[in-house]
Amino acid sequence: MAIQTNNSQDISWVLAQIEHIAQFGQNASGITRLAFTDDDLQARKYIIELMQSAGLAVITDAIGNIIGRYEPEGINPEAATVMTGSHLDTVPSGGKYDGVLGIVCGLAAVSRLKTRDELKHPLEVVVFAAEESSRFSFATIGSKAMAGLTNPAVLKRIKDHEEISLASELEKIGLKIDNALNAARPANSIKGFVELHIEHGELLDEKSINIGIVDRVSAPTRLKITVTGMPGHSGAISIAERQDALVSASLIVLAIRNIAAEYEYKGAIGTVTILKTRPGAINVIPGKVEMWVDIRGTEHESIVEMLQEIKDAVSSIADDNDTAVAIEVLASEKPVSLSQNLNQIIETVCSKLRLSSLRLDSRAGHDAMNIAYVAPAGLIFVPCKDGVSHNENEYINPKDIEAGLDVLTETLYQLAK
Image 1: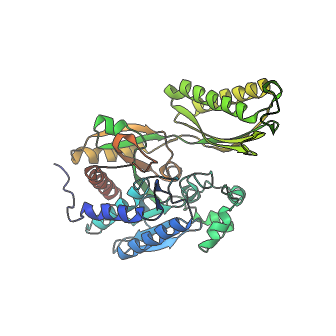
Image 2: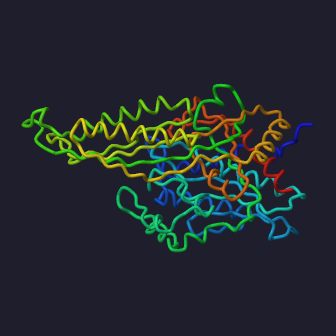
Image 3: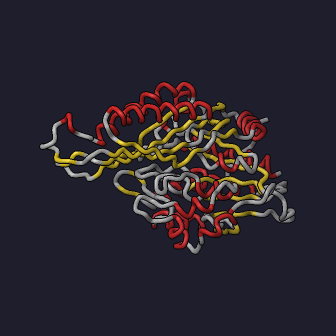
C-alpha cells in the first residue's frame, strides 16, 4: 500500500521561502552569499525567524551552525536526535536551490511530522555554517566541527582572499574560535542524519529519475600551486631569455586537465579553478602565478595516483621552463560511504511512494559526508534541470521538490518513530 503524504503542507510555501531567501545576495549574475558576509547573516536571521515561528527551539552552536529543535511531548529528552538540514551559503553567482532546498524542506518535513503521535525521538533542522569553500578555501566547516573533525590550530589560521579571518567573522556573531570544539556532538547523540539536496550533475534529469540515493560522497583534495619566474619588460626581453611564470602555469593547467581526463573513468577528476598573476601589468612579463586546484574522487587510491601524476607533470614543466614551482596541499580528505541501512529505508520509502530511484555516487562534497563519521547518514538527490548547478540558471521542477519533500518526510518518520 502506498504511503499517504500530508497534503496540508502546501508546496507553494516551500517555493515561496526559496524565492524569499534568494533575495539575500541576489545580483545581476545570480546569488552571491558567501559564508558570514552581510548577505549570509541576513539569510541566517530569516531562517532563525522561520524556525521560531514553526515552534522550534533555536540555538547557534560554537562554530555558527544554526539548530532548530522539536521535542515531541512526553518523549525522553535524552533520546538520540533525528537530524536533517543543509547550508545557506553559496558560491559566487550561484543558484537559489543549492543547500537552501534541504533547509526549507527540512522545516516543512518537521512541520508535517509534528502532527504525528508516534514520534519517540527529537527532530532537528540544521543550517551548517560555511559549507562552500568559496570564501575560506575550506569546505564544510560547520559539519566538520559538529562531527569532531576540526583542528583548532587550523581553524585559527583560516583566512579569505582579503585576509579576513574566520575567527574575526565568528566574533561578529558573538562566537570565539577557541570554543569551536564545543560544537562537536556527543557520541550516540544522533540517531540518523538525512540531507536533501540538488544533484550536482545531469544523471537523474537525463534518465527522468525522481530520486537519487547516494552511496558514496567524493572528498576534496585541494592544492595551491605557486609558479615563480622573472618579471621583465614585455617588449624588451626576447622569448628565449624569459622566465615567464604564466607560460609555465598555462602548461600546468593543460596538464592537469589531461590527467583528469585519464582518471575520470576511475571516479576522480581535477580542475584548476583560480589563477592570479603578479605583477598584473599589461607591459610586464608575469613573474609569479598562483593557482588553486580542486581534485575530487570516490576512489581514494585513484586520487592518490592522480595527485602523484600532477606533481610529476608540474616538476617537469618547471624544469623545462626554468621556473620554480611550490605545491601546498590545502586539504586532503577521503571519500565517504554513507549508511547502507539508511539507504535501504530511503529506497523502501521511494517504492511505497511510487517514485523511481537510483543508487549513485556524488562527486560533489556535502555536509552528510562529515556527519557520517558520527551517525548513520543519508543523502537524497532531486534532479536539477539539464544538470546545471552552482549557476544562476539552476532550476528544479516543483514536482521534483514535492517528491523530495515527501521522501525526506517519510524517511525522517521511519527514523523517529
